[in-house]
Structure formats: C-alpha cells, structure tokens
Image (cartoon, rainbow, N blue to C red; front, side):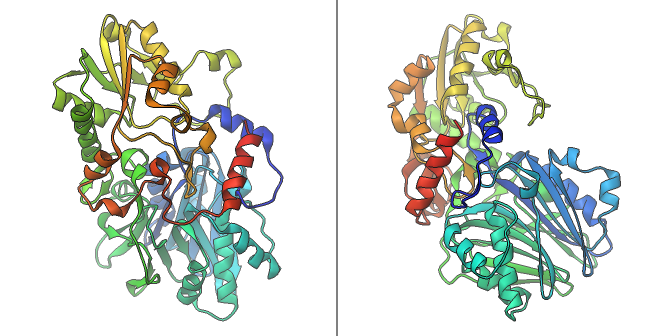
Amino acid sequence: MNPDHPVTLDLDNQSNHQEERPDKPEEACGVFGIYAPGEDVAKLTYFGLYALQHRGQESAGIATFAGDEVHLHKDMGLVSQVFNESVLSQLPGTIGVGHTRYSTTGSSRKVNAQPAVVNTRLGKIALAHNGNLVNTVKLREELVKDSINLVTTTDSEMIAYAIAQQINAGSDWLDGAIQAFHRCQGAFSLVIGTPVGVMGVRDPNGIRPLVIGTYGENPVRYVLASETCGLDIIGADYLRDVEPGEVVWITETGLASYHWSQQPEKKLCVFEMIYFARPDSLMHNETLYSYRMRLGRRLARESPVDADIVFGVPDSGIPAAIGYSQASGVTYAEGLIKNRYVGRTFIQPTQAMRESGIKMKLNPLKDVLTGKRVIIIDDSIVRGTTSRKLVKALRDAGAVEVHMLISSPPVTHPCFYGIDTDTQDQLIAARMSVQEIANQLEVDSLAYLSWEGMLEETRENTNNFCSACFTGNYPVAIPEQVKRSKLMLEKATV
C-alpha cells in the first residue's frame, strides 16, 4: 500500500506477507527496457527480467510497442511462472519494457503489477518504476483534481499519469516527462516506453541504480536495466550508468541525454552494494563480489575472533566470509546449504513447519559444525527473528560456540525510498544495544562493521551514498505524514 494513499487495507494478505517475509530488507523491484528493431524484444526483455528476479519475486510484466499498438502481459508470480513461449509470442514490437516487483507500497495484488500503461494524446506509455516517492499525497491530490481515476495503489501509476497530464496539456514526449519528473520527490529509477522510443531516468540523488547497455552492431541498439547482470544475460555490453538527474531518450536516431535536474547530488543506496544487487553486477567499475569481500577483510581487522571455521549465510554473506577468512587465517567452510529452489510460494507452510525454523531454506551441515567454534557472517539483521532461529540450528547441529558478525552497521531507521524495512520500533538495533541483541540471539559474541568501514571500502567518495537506514540522515526530507502512515500500516499488519 502506498503509505499516503487512503485505500482499504488488504489485511489478510498483508498479515501473511508479514509472517513469511525474511528477516532482511527487501528490494522493491527491477526494471528493464530495450529499443531493438528487428529483434525479439519480448524474449530479450524476459531474459533481462529473469536476471533481475532477485530484486522482486511477487509479480512480473512486459509491455511491447509495435508502432502505436501496445501489447501487455503481467501477473503475480516469478518471471518463469508469468511467461512462456506462447505468451511471449503474443508480444510483438520493437520496444520492450519489463518489470519484476516486490511491493513496498501498494498491496500485493495483480492490479498493482507493472508496467503501468496509460493513455496520452500522443499514444500510450508503459512505465516501470524502481523506488518510492515521498510526496504522493500532494501528487495524488493534483491528479484527482484533474479528474484522473487512479485504479492502483502505487505511486508508479501516479508518475505515469503525471506524464500523461503534461502531454495532454500540449507538451511533447520528452518535455512532458521532464515536467512530470519535477513534480516527483523521493527515489525513482524509471524505464518508460512510448510508440517512438524508450526513456531511462533517475531521480536527482540516483538512490536506485539504472544502467545503459548496447546490443548488437549495425545498427547499435540500446538496453536499460537496473543492474549490469540484466545486460550480461542477453549479451549486451555495459556502456555507463544513467546519471542522477539524467534522462536518456532512445529513438531511431540513437541515444540522447538530458540533465533535467540542475542540482543532482549522488546518493546511491549503499545497501545496493552490500546486499540487494547481484554479486556479479558492476558498480564503480568492479563487481560487487569484490566490494563484499573487502567488507569481510575489514570485519577481520575490526572484530577478530578466535574460532575454528568461518562461513557466510548463503548467498549474500559468502563473499564477506571469504574475505574474513583471507584476512584472519580462520578456515573458510560451508556450514549451511541453501535450497536454491525456494522462492515465494503460493503454498503456505503449516504453523508447525514455521516453528521448525529456517530449514526450508537453510540446512546446517552437522559433520562440519560438530565440536567447532564457528563464525557466521551475514549482511544485516533487521528484526532478529531469523538470526535467532539460525543460531539455534547451528547449536543443535553441534557447534560449541557461535559468533555472529555482520558486514554492515546496525539498521536503526526505516527506509522510505523503495526498500521494505520495518518501522523503527520493529528494528532490533533501534531498541537494543549490541550486547542486548547478542543476548537475544543467544550468540557467544556479536559485532557489526563500522559505518566508516562500510563507506571507506567502497573506494569512492563516501558522500555519494545514502546510508539513512544506519544514520537517520535522509537525503530527501520525509514528510511526517509519510512516517505516521508507515507506522499505522505496520501496526495493522502484525
């Protein structure tokens, strides 16, 4: 649900979502766009979304443009569940826009799946959005005043209608879009399809990522994706990032760039680097695997532990665990095996299965753990519920000591920019000291990476990142009404 959007709460669905959600921050979504005349853009978009599946497992959608005709298919489920050869064959065109979603705003319903398609006087647009607006109350009031009937509970639909408003008032595609972007506050990385081209845009802070790739030769075709792994899967070459406050406009004449914001200030979400993005994706000219290994080495310097083995929580904790082992000399081992075929399931486990803990996704290796002093490394702790179950499972498997290290600082503040975090009173690090958390998790010791260490290991200007979930310093001001709405939603869904 949009925190500012006064619609009826889908309490049954939200309650199940709350119980089943992992003890992690969850990414909002992945976006993909392509301009490729003569190619099967639907299939290319499908594979792009497949590579971005980790960014959202709730719904998926593809819109294609064949001249003025728009072909759209979207539904609940994983990319491979929503699409098949038959469906893709019914999506012809030269332009493709794709989206895979995890809802942070808007309840988990098919109507909220993207891309959002709306009419304008120049033709339809299809919009895919990664991020979250913080000024939706004002924007919604402006749209409703213009007799626009919003049919979803997402801010993404509002952005699409804001663009349509400007175009219907006489603007062309590009000017209309830019005027609408100035009405949006918060985090937004967008891919927008039109009958004549596709746009890629980032907010002035570039909070969520968006990259440009080239596909093929003679002529060169262009691709947009949330991460470079969305380019790699189709054989596209990484060109560059879309810059904060930039819109790229891809048409038959090629790629044109416009800096629509006069005061861009880079504030990439640092959690993209720590956890959200795939380890094989490129950021700052290196894979995130390399950065995450450096976090582990930094942990070894900041928090040395005398232990027999070290391992990571699959998959996001593994690079840091390898780095820790390299820097400390503690033997790296696999202590947990992940069931890689567990995603979001429509078959809910029984209460007894829930109480059995995390074995559906992670299973300890007893012969590796028995009699060992172990270090387990994870990328974050949000509520602590899963971490406590994990520690118990390791002790039950024979570990004689369990030391937990976290390759990021304590999460003490909620995110309002497109990441699904709890309200502050649900965040364990906002309520307890490190020692109190250690007691709660029943570990022998607990340590977090320092805030300074996390940023210094990026090897970039440390001012170029949003770390509000660790500090409470939000680069875009959060209205009090938005903060209250998030708290009200949280109380309604637990």
